[in-house]
Length: 290
Length: 283
Image (tube, rainbow over all chains, first blue to last red; front, side):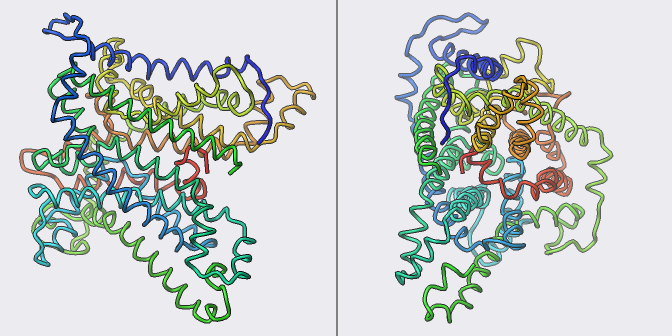
C-alpha cells in the first residue's frame, strides 16, 4: 500500500463528480424526504404531516409482506448461488483456450438487458412454446408460472441463478487464481486430501472475494425489479411482489406519494447499512493488500 | 490444472477421471447457461405460425423475416439508436468526471475523502425504484423529459460511482514515483495526466468504459420512466410486440437477440477483467 500525501487541493479534482452526483442523487432524495413528511389534497397544495406516513407504513401489512418475500428471495438465491458459484469456479480450467472460452460464455448472461432476461425466461417457461415449460408439461409435472405460486417462485429463482451465478463463479475464480503455487506444494508435502486443500487453503484465501460476492448479490437481489416484473408482474396475486415492484406500484401506479416516499426512505436506510458493511469489508481487504 | 488434485502418487493415478469430472461439470453448467439463449435465437428464426403451431428444437422453415421487420421499421430500429445515444453519452460523461476524481482518491488524503468515497458507493447501491418518481419530476420540471441527456444524466447516479471505484482500483497499481518524476521533469498536471498517466491505465479506462456502457445498456426502469417517444429505449420498445392480436413472439425474440449482440461483441476483450469490474475494481 502506497503512502498518500495530504493535499486539500485534491478537492478540485473531485468537484465535478460531487456536483454531478449531487444533482442526480441529493436533489431527488430531498424530494423524497419532502414527500415523506407532507400530505396533499391535490392541486400541489401540501401541508405538514410529520412522521404520519412512517407510522402508517410501519403498521401496514403490505410493506412487511413485501419485505418478507424480499428476504426470502434474497436468502434463497444466496443459498444457491454462492455454493454453486464456488463449485463451478473450482471446476473451471485455470488457463489456456478453454479457460477463456468458459469466461466468455459465463459472462454472457451478465450482459443481457434485464428486461430481455425476463423475456427469455418468460418464453422459456411457457407451457405452449417454451422448452422448459413444454418439457415439464410433457413429463406430467404441473407447472404454470402465471397461475401457480410455487411455479412462479421457482421460475424467478432459477432465472436469477441463471443470470448471476456466473458472477459469483468469476469472483471466486479470481480469488483462486491469486493463490500462489507454493501453498499447493506445501499441501502436497503434508499429504492433505482434496477436502482439506479446499477447507484450509482455498476457502480462507477466497474469503475476501466471497464476502464481496455475497454483499453484491444480496444488494442487487434486494433491489431487483425488472426481471421478475417482466416474468410474473408480481403475480399470481401478490406472490412475487418484491420490495421494488411494490414501491413502483405505489409511487408510479397509484401515485401515493407520501407512503411511497416513507417506504423509499426506509428501503434506502437498509441499503445504506449494507453499503457500510460492504465498505468496511473493502477497506479491510485493501489494508491487507489483497 | 491437476496440481491441486494430484496430491500423492495414489491420487495421481486417479487424476484422469477427475479431469473428466471437471469437464462434465463445466459442460453441464455452460449448457444450462446457453439453453435459454438458444431458445430465444431459435424462436427468432421461426414464423409465428411455426412457433405457435408446432414444437421443434430448431427452425423447420428458417426465416429472417423477424429481423427484417426490426431493421426496416423506424419505430423499431430507432429504439436501438436511442439506447445507443444515451448509453454513449453516459459513458463519456461518467469517464470524464470520474478520471480526475479517481486520481485524487488514489493519490491524496484530503478532508472528508473517506466519507465521500463511501457516499459514492451508496449511490451505486441505491435502488432505481426509489429514484424513478423524483427523477421523473426533476427532469420534467427542467424541461429535459424525453431527451437522451436526461437518461444519460440519470444513469450517472450509479455509473459515476462505479467508474470512480473501478478506476481507483487500477490507478493504485501505478507507482507514485512516476507522478513525481514527471513533475520534476517539468510536466504540468494536465499534460502529465493526459500524456503519461492515461496511457498507463488504458486497460482500466477500457474496463470502466465497458461497465458504464453495460450497466446503462441493461437498465430499464429509469430509462423507461424518463422517456415517452423521442428517446424511447429499445427495452421499452419491446413492449410493442403485445398487440390486439396477441404477442408477436418472433419479433420479440429477434429484438431480444439483437440486444445481446453489443455485449457479446466486446466481451472477449474484457474477459479477464469481468470479475474486477463487477467487484468495483476490488479483486
